[in-house]
Length: 85
Image 1 (cartoon, rainbow, N blue to C red):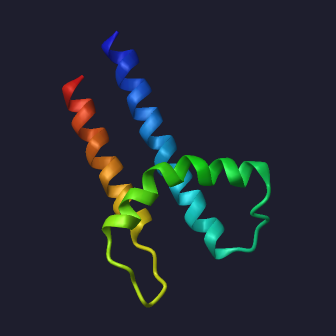
Image 2: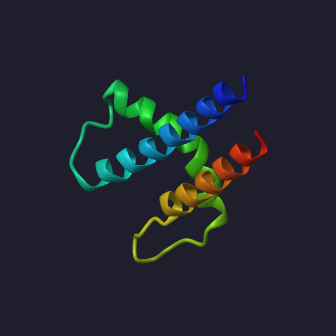
């Protein structure tokens, strides 16, 4: 049972981190923001990124550091949860 829970937690957090990476890469290339998959990606990752953007100070250079912070926070929370299992 513990192995199953470990695997579910590990895969869920890995998926979230991959989705954040995909969103970052999409910000560098032109894409259709009205595509259903893109909108789904934005909805899933905005749950994590919006609170971080509200906490971080606004950058005048136009660089968004919230994906980096989210990536490290997800890694920390994942490690903490996996140690508890």
